[in-house]
Image (cartoon, rainbow over all chains, first blue to last red; front, side):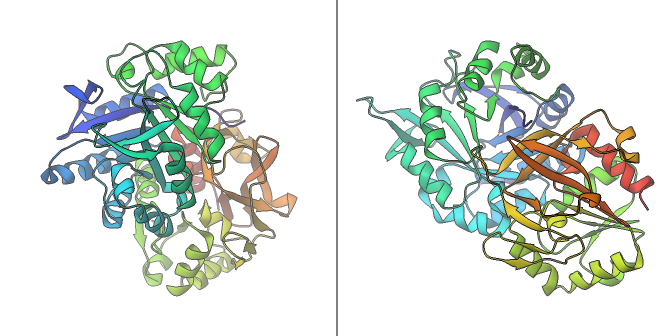
Length: 253
Length: 201
């Protein structure tokens, strides 16, 4: 039976893992390659590196981190952030990453999705979407640039289009839930799940063991992503999986 | 020396890293002469079947693969590298494969998300490899298409994705082929590669 995936996310800035709330107030929490190794040993199913480095000079730092990680972590991992061209995609994949996630760059240049999928396969193109509920509650809009810009684009429509263009997986972050630790945004996730047939990774809002159970019990996602929870050792990946197994959710242990 | 065939498709670095972790010497090459000196060959592959086969043929490495098989050189196909060893695929039009294994590659017929992405239990028939692994070890899959109409005697391992039986480990003669990614399947995956390196002839 296919298992539900638990995915630690490492936000990397200038070669260090950082964490903040709602993308502000960042604190350094460690070395990305070491943390990747730790999560691998804890039984993480995948990893996501999100490069939030602001400057271009540090792009090579990320490639270097990918190379080192790939040499000692034998599980799949995704790299997102700062990937704007098919050359960027190629560089990251050649360094040893399995997938890239495209967020703002895909909104600005949707052709990047089918170009990337055409060259490297649908399976390595993850469409990352940050969404926030519209003021009138009628749905969700895509926000970019770390939540600062509301594009006015309907998130569900954008995700449908992204999959048509070749995205093989959706990484959905609810900006309403992110940083709140009150649980994943189940209505948003379910709306996405009904709209497309590719796997969906839930992100944003996870603050406790029950939240992992809630998202899988509602069949709102195929995988759940969390960052600060794991970085501060509030929980280990192993704790989450043991708990889910007891509750009857299929996990790899 | 293990030769990893480079025909411009796939995450070759991961396969090489896994082999190094196991202490094996490996090289990545698209040069037939260099690959021909290797004792064992790995045919990786990600992306679309048609593109993979076209690139392999364009580099004339399809003939090299066939020659390896004829000479009895141990070969491991991974993911689309496995699929290309079958007769044909229906991915984005019908494309001919190398036809070593009987069978064709078809799209998932399921209500579950496609591609299948994630860790699934590998169920093994009685086979020397089985004793090397945990019972029903988890392996990592990423695919939208799988083998069908294959010969039962070629199959040694499979998983279930919902109700669909996903045939995912084949052995015939000196050829081993996996739909999942052993190089991304943690310690159990490394053990499968180790079996290929040390015991599969």
